[in-house]
Image (cartoon, rainbow, N blue to C red; front, top):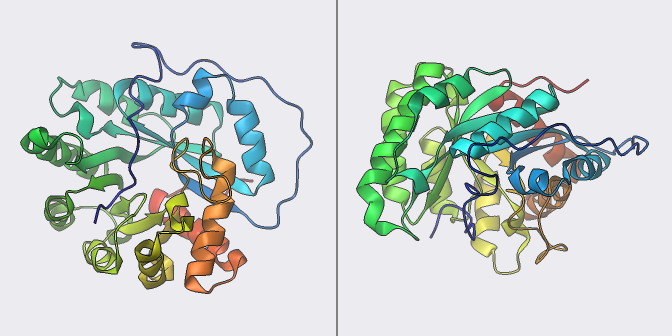
Length: 299
């Protein structure tokens, strides 16, 4: 079973080459809403929202739904710049991850540029990085080389990793175990396997490797029994939630473009799978995100 959600396509071209994702958005002037609980969306690709000039509206809807903080995800040069810009424009609310993901395995990469971005305020992880043999099995060796390079970068900066893995479970875990053995940081801050779509057996292997496990809107899909079984198995203190926006909108929004406000529905799906209260899932996953990414609660 695949270990990560099936993105239809990477976002490396969502922003024009050589450009960041633009300047500050307009303010909508919507009165603040006091949510019933607080959430952290640990995986957001802001590129499309910025390209369409919709970030302000997307953030307002997310805040109204109880989302207090966001991890903006990179993975390619333009996406890294976009994520870093989002964090700069919303300090304390948006943090970012930057890295070179698997679809860049056969391309030249500027490691100095990545190092410079990871030195910017708000950098909390290296990612999105990992392996995906579904679309490009012919690049397996190059993907593994790039993944190992990114894991080494994470060790240098002592940053957790945000990992993608699809149809590459054994290789992903082998490299992560090597990474864990050499990891100089806090053991609890090794990283997260994002958008989990495996079953209980693979979830257990991920946990044994030292990672958090993050669940997305796929958990709410009718045919996702094995994912819900995995969500039951993961200890509360290793559990995270995400949207992976703009992909994989949860029920009842399935088929629409995903956005961070819908992480509340992910929390509901995980709570239902675990037989837990929604408020408890919100509280625990927020604490876990704060620990893994070393972020302070927004004021």
